[in-house]
Amino acid sequence: MPSKELKGIVDALRLAYRDTRHAAEMDALYGRFLAPGDLAFDIGSLVGNRIGSFRRLGARVVALEPGPLANRALRLLYGRDPNVTLIRAACGESEGAVRLSVNSENPSVSTVSDAFIEAACGADGWQGQRWDRTIDVACTTLDTLIGGCGVPQFIKIDVEGHEVEVLSGLRTPVAAVSFEFTTIQREIAHRCLNRLTDVGPYQFNVSLREDNRLMFEQPVTASQMAAYVDGLPHEANSGDIFATLSGS
Image 1 (tube, rainbow, N blue to C red):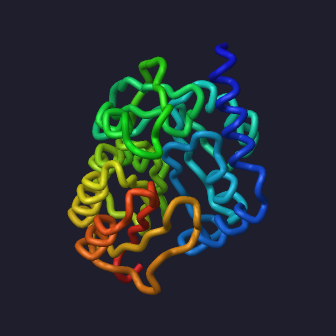
Image 2: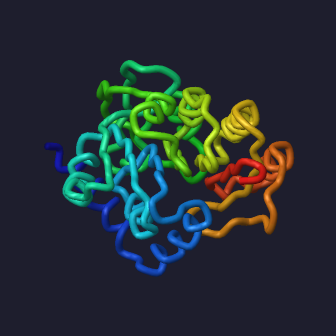
């Protein structure tokens, strides 16, 4: 087991679980979308702080994470919880296998997207990031998960530039979806917004970085959200867009 990769996971665990105030803020955010007994999908779990939040809210969780060391951490943390289903896989447009590029020092940005790596290389704020090995991992789709586990109330997606492919595997409208975006790939946010409007009558809100606060008092349209993303400074770096079905 490479010591650098193990250190990366340990660092991710410390960052994810050290701040109880941040955890409470996360619960308040996701509590807008989840109630006790609801089903949530966590796509791109890493070390599972969102799993922890969803479980504190009383939700059942299906969690996907393709990284082998991250999966070991997840099984230690949540493997005995009967309300958590852990699946070692990526998620995408079709069933099969994909190649995961591993960032050993910063596993939170390991990705199956070559375009994401290309966008990050040389970008301000991304200096020093290095994807140092690749592994082949299984890939499933959101519709396959829904067929096996049921329709979730909420889907959280954090897959480093692969969000469009994940949403392309969703043809079943669900009440709420969140997906991460970055300012180095704003076009990905546009394509995700368009994809979700094809799936159902969604409206949108946004939380920047790890702030855990929604920026708009009321949800906005896809075009309004696209304009907001385009107007962000590069230094904003990333955020999560929350989509909710109108009337839900």
